[in-house]
Length: 459
Image 1 (tube, one colour):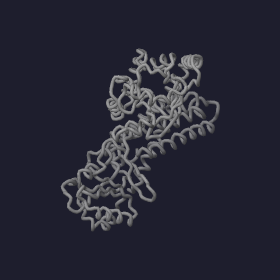
Image 2: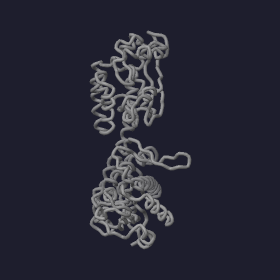
Image 3: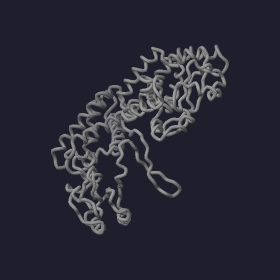
Image 4: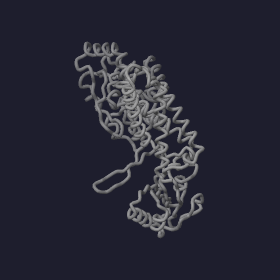
């Protein structure tokens, strides 16, 4: 059996399941008098739309890299994620264009999930389900990092077919006892040719000689082989690693950042929907605040201030104006009266604040225009508050992690700290949120924020 046959067979079975789900969900109804040809054309068009989106997303998420017979749980999870995204994208297209009125989208979601899952469960007990077009991988290096990459208990190893290991000079070969030892670095050209290797996973130990690592790269390049490099010094939990370029020199960039996932996509959907609904529902409050600001003091309704967003990007943060015009220039004169340590600035009974502005701040109404920032994607509903550039310039190295995510309207500090904690504790609260983020945590913070706003603890 060739490497491509299992993948093609799995794709064909999945497309058949999607066609079955469409048929059972009602794609054939509502056209009794239309004739066979229009019905066939409609079914074919809908099926092609779902099939194209499915193949694109399934390929992107690596759905076919995990044979059901080797890791059924992971295979089912990837299929469920791919189908959910396909249903959302292709379903929206279908409902807005050619889908019949009788097509039940909730039923289509359930049927597609059931059929795709059932096909994988059935495949898991067949030889086809155990076969795959997995790339043949050679591990070069013998250390804990290399062992973790190729361990049979690793969730990602099912996407590769490990043919063996080649250690660097002086490494402990017992670290890789679960893979056959194929030779030394000097034997690498022969090993690559005889074993038909598709990808090399290079993971040297701290004791590996740099010259040997360079030799490995050179040999793999001569054979046109893909190389994935996993040095031990990148054994970090909270940093995202990427490529960086300075002039003609490639390098690595390391940044603390949440990984992209369906959960983060859902967070953006919640932000957009919540901001849009909030602006409509609170339109009378917006109008009342705007009139109060305009009629009680000279100057614009909105105060625009440059703030630092995700990854240091600057944006204009919107607020209802709560101070007299030109008050920002007086901040340095009041710096000695700040009750907030560190680079942040807070003053009790700030003389620059107007009477209406004091009321708006008490109930955090001055922050409502930032729903526009959320709608445009500069901010999120939940996230660390956006600092101003002069504050960020004074951050220590560990404090800069708070700008590694999108800023928000509310976060842990607004709910549990507010003006009662030091700046150091404030940043620690933000980092707790970054390191423990989940949709459930966002929902809890939103609920607690409502309670805090009603109590009127702002200043």
